[in-house]
Length: 270
Image (cartoon, rainbow, N blue to C red; front, side, top):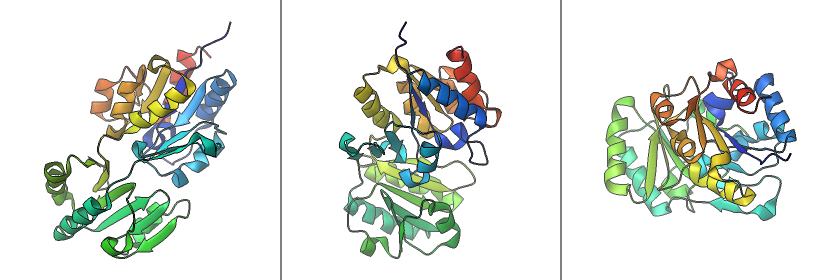
């Protein structure tokens, strides 16, 4: 009998990836088997494509991918699929840079798909963000940015994060959604208002004609909430934050305990 295909959506950091940023052999094996059985597997991450492509290639995927939490969705193997890029208005970004400067933030980073712009020179951050060797420009964002922006990261002092976030909510709520990164980073991430991983995932389910009840999504952080709610089966990782576990349909073992592999083996009786 023919099984109806499921879409399995995987967050990367803290979910598919172990803490050392590798995919366990167990997870890779289960994913291979499910793909052989006709199911679709996709990555849905806050990372840019250049920092997720190695995992896409390692799993030998042939599906679209959700990057920047839904602000950029494309199909690495099929250009005709389209590129969905939802960006932040340049004027709004310039105003946000001005306010951030008044808080003496450590740095402000703007990404336009795979080009990275640093407001201030910053060895430590440059190391973190140069995976996949993007074009890097350092200097005043108000001068250097010439077009709308995929995402902005504000690296602030811990005590200033709440004030900057409340400014963003008060002044730019119509335009911008912001989230706080998990410790140890005191980073505020901004993308266009109304964009999240579920919005990106819906483009993929529409394309394959797979209804939400046949979507299984795995995540661990607050940028996974909408995606887990969208999926018929939203799975929180054992290491996930409380908010994710409370909205999830199921809780798996942690990313260090091969949570995805164990869950999918049970679910599909492999």
